[in-house]
Amino acid sequence: MRIIAFIDCNGQPALGLRTGAQVVNLTAAGLPATLEELLQRSDGLDAAREAAARCDKPLALADLTLLPPLQNPAKAFAIGLNYIDHAAESNFEPPRHPVLFQRFPTSWVAHGAPLVRPRVSTQFDYEAELVAVIGKAGRYIAKEDALEHVAGYSIFNEGSIRDYQFRSGQWLWGKNFDRSGGFGPEFVTADELPAGAKGLQLTCRVNGEVLQSANTDSMIFDVATLVAACSEGMALQPGDMIITGTPSGVGLARKPQVWLKPGDICEVEIEGLGVLRNPVIDEAD
Image (tube, rainbow, N blue to C red; front, side, top):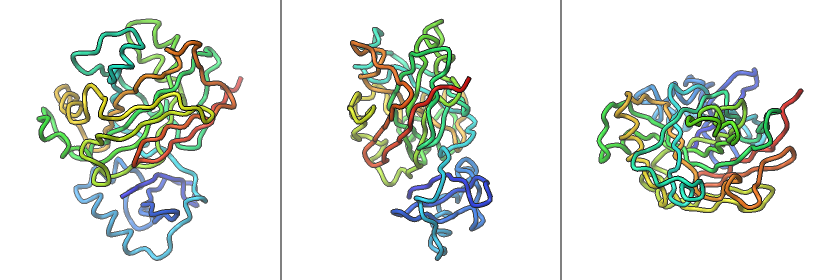
């Protein structure tokens, strides 16, 4: 099942179930307007399937303005250095434990919306990443049970302002500039993909040129390990998300370095999940 968030004809957020080029408005059928609220219902995904089966007037996907799949998750974990080749190109030893930081909702935009290069820096980098979305609450979750807590997956472009990222030992500043990351285009339920989203090809293209190409099998800490690790520190709730890290090929590590600039088109594609596409603009004065 593939669920999108969009703006309805009244200018309000809504959820839709996409089948091909058509979308059933789940919110108009009485379900919540956000994925977070839908997942907080114990029957949320089942109710979405039932509502879609009753609808006889779907919308055209091409007519909709998309929103990020999650609007305001309680927790958005981001994972650093989760591919050995990326740790190496960044001059770090492979981590022994997951490297966690937070990504805030103001830092991401939907599929099709522009990524904004801030006026204070030209070191605007791309990072192709898989997102795991929590669907079942839990604390101290065992790794062998962890995938039962994952409702589905999406795509993230973790735009990073590198000079700000490395101003201190904490990366949060450079990872949270307003509208610097992309998220979407949709949420895909876990049953549509291999367990743990393993074995999926992940690619990042800038203006059609492939700059990152890897497989989710190459993650140091897989999805189950990340869910278990994050739950040690705090209880996970439906709608929480884990942005699972990027492979090698980032602009910072290239020679010469590659930075996103106005006019660029950045695409992140993950097998089975689709393509997240965003243009790049400069921050307005």
